Length: 132
Image (tube, rainbow, N blue to C red):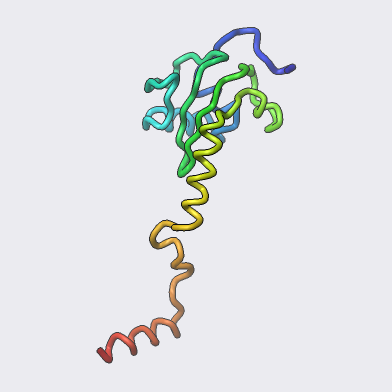
């Protein structure tokens, strides 16, 4: 990989940004501070160094990832290069697929509400509720 750094470690917030898990380093730092990122099973601070072979557990919204660091990049590159920086574990792939299927079968309450009622809909609702 041509963008690989000569150093064997990198700050975890910068690595998460270069691996394209987050759009900005500040978002990566906020996730780390909120406890959504663990390195080798332990909570970390944004300045913690990550090295090839380390295991990173992270939660982004509904998705939970477990990845093994394969390489360290000096700069943020294209998505194809970013995917070479890590390898997702088989358990993580299976867990994400299972959770995605569960969300599809049982969506979060209120997610099916759609748009707010129109004036006509509100009138019908009031007619229905006022007659009871």
